[in-house]
Structures are given as C-alpha cells and as structure tokens.
Length: 466
Ligand code: UD1
Ligand code: CA
Image (cartoon, rainbow, N blue to C red; front, side):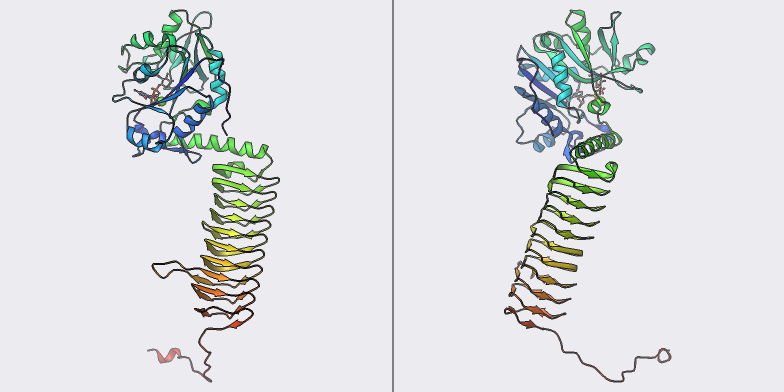
C-alpha cells in the first residue's frame, strides 16, 4: 500500500525515472522494467511510489524497447522521453532538462529499483530542502559495482566515484550511492552542460554533479536508506528473485500485524491485494493473486491458489484447491482438490468436494456437490444434492446451454444432464441417467438401459487362450 505524503515544503517537484538501459543480464525479450515483483511490473511500482509524492510531473527516460515499455503504460500520466543512445545517467537527465522548470527539485529514480518507498523519498526531499542536493546512500558489506561516497576531511560528501574509476582506497569504502538523487533545478542546466565523458566508461556520469555541487558550496546531504532492499536494483534474475522475497517478507509481516495467521510467512505469496477479516488462517504454500477478500475466520488450506475471490466468514478451503473470479458465501466448505472457475457463485453453507469443477454457475444455500463432478452454466437450488460423477453437458461444440436444477433435488451419481434442460424442485434423477428432457417437480427420472442378467455365465478360462 502506497500512502500519499506531503512533499518537502512547497517546492515544486518533478520526478525523473531512468529506464533506458538494456538490461542485458536479464537475458530476456521483455524490457527489464516490465519484469514483475509481487505480480506487478517494476516500473509500475516505481510510478505508484512517485505518484504518492504528488509531483508536478513524472518523466520516464526510455531507450531499449521503448515502444514496449510505453505500450505497457499507455494510460499512465507520464511524460515519455526517448534517449536514443545510452551515453550514461547524466546524458539521460540531459534529455529531460528542457522539460524541467528552473525552480524546485528533481528527484531521480531508477525503473529497476522497484521497492523504493515514499517514506525514504520524503526523507531525502526533506533533507535536500532549499538549494541543497540530496543523495540516498547505503552501507554495504559488498559494495562492488556501486559508486562510492567520498567524504572530505570534515565528513561532508565531496564526490561520488564509480567503481571503475576508483583507486584502491576508494574501493574499500562501503558507503555507496543508491543512484537516487534530489537535485536543485536552479543549478541543473549549468551542471549538466559541464559533464564530460572523461572516465573509465566514457559516459556522462550524473554522479559528477556531486563534486560540482560540493565545489560550489551547495550543501550535499546524504540520507541513508532504512533497509538495503528498498534501494536495491535488479540487474539479473537472481536479484529479481531476491527482491521478490524481500517484498513478500514485507507483505507477510504486514498481514500478520493486521491479525492474519500465516502458518509459514516464508511460504506465502501475495501478488495483488488481500483484505482479511479477523482470525483468518492461511496454511503453507498459498498464492493469492488479484484482489481477494477473506471474511472473518476463513481458513485456507495448504497449496491453494486464490485469484480475485470473495469468501464469506467461516468458509474453509481444503488443500490443493484453485479458485478464480468467484464469490463464496459464509460457512462454505470447498475442496480438497476443488476448482472454482470464473463466475462460480456459491451461497452460504454450500459444500463442494474433491475433483469438482464449477464454472459460471450459482449454487444456492446448502447445495452439495461433493465428488468428481462438472457443473458449468448451471443454477442449482437450495439443499439440492448432486451425486458423484455428474456432468452438465453444456456445450454442443458451438453453443453453451444452461442447466437449471431446482431446490431439494437429488441427482444420482453418474448422471449426464444434457443442456438446455431443467430439473424442477424436488425431482430425483436416477444414477447413470442421461437427462435430455425437463424433469417435473417431485418426479423420479430414470433414463438408462434396463439391466439384463444372464444366468450361469461362464467367463473365458485361461486355458482357452493358447
Ligand atoms: C549507477 C551510478 C552509481 C550507483 C548505481 C546504483 C552513475 C554514473 N552511477 O551506476 O553511482 O551506485 O547506479 O545502481 O550514475 N540509464 C539510462 N540511460 C543511460 C544509462 C543508464 O536510462 O544512458 C538507466 C538504467 O536503465 C538504470 C539506471 O540508469 O536504470 C542506472 O544505470 P546503470 O548503468 O545500471 O548504472 P550503474 O553503472 O549501475
Ligand atoms: Ca545498475
């Protein structure tokens, strides 16, 4: 959940998100910033966090696969800026310079640093209030690859030196630049124009602005990020997986604080939004996607997948069940091994057992479908019992038809209900029947071959084989 925060003072704020890099180490056809954390593209997370700061504008610098990135965010309120050639982070910001005002602050974020939070950014902007420059820093045991924060004799930040340009002493520094900067717009034009690619990588380094600021007496304010994962970037799939775990850990901790029991927070995944009532219990290896709402006392068994579902209070989902886009009442029992597909609507106290598939159907209060059954495009009345192996034959290869079953019906095992067909209140269907015509109220309906019994039947004997 991203909260809206007051930005530092009244300074107008522009956000620039750098996302033009190639992402070579992902080895992917998909642009890096479209890879997902918690089921959402990394860039979407950064955009949400940026929006929480209420900036005047958000500019996104794109280059590699620019078209794909743009299309993924076609409706987003952002200014797209193309950087045709990636000549460094300083060059990227040069592309945006014409669109920036001459007052206020520019906050630089990375599209591949997905877990940055609004609180860290608000702290950085507060520290950089006025004409100061803010640098979000971290202190790492293994700072390899990152720009190092070089301090002067008084402990002030003097410069950022990139790994490839650093001397041995600088390489030993563990304080690093996360890349996230708050820059005073008034100084940006002269600083960016002064950048030169005189470094090991032949790039225009945005980080050279720090030495320029320090040289001109502009205060440089370092702010250390509260936790490593907040400012960690994704360059490869291992780092993507590591941040996914950090994100999931945070979601699990939050849910437990809100009163949800997670049998093992390390074996729980939320790729969306989950709202829970009191005393919800979620067993191991459960995946929640989309938007889900679980009422008071709901229990979700091990290895279940829930996507866009609403479950009423007291409902129990037994292990290995898969539920998508369905609405379930109170005190319902589902599974184990049940599949509820989109449009399944179950009223209170319904029972759906193992190897039952339900699609686009309503089950009224107290209906039971307990074993090995397919219910598609059907309405089942109150307290009706559907026996094992029943199939609603809803499809003729072209069209779908509905099956209507009234209240207090009893459908015998192995029945085939060939839709469109209606079984009226109180009707009974004999086991193994193929029902093609409506069944009147309170009737018994049997539609199967009569049994033939042949007396003294000799089964073939093994010696007859040869
Ligand atoms: C950069 C910082 C380094 C910091 C590190 C943190 C510079 C010179 N160095 O180094 O101090 O410790 O990030 O991860 O800024 N990008 C563009 N256009 C470009 C180049 C980069 O949009 O021309 C984007 C990339 O897509 C990426 C971000 O800028 O999102 C950082 O680029 P990257 O090449 O990863 O910079 P680093 O060398 O890691
Ligand atoms: Ca990087």
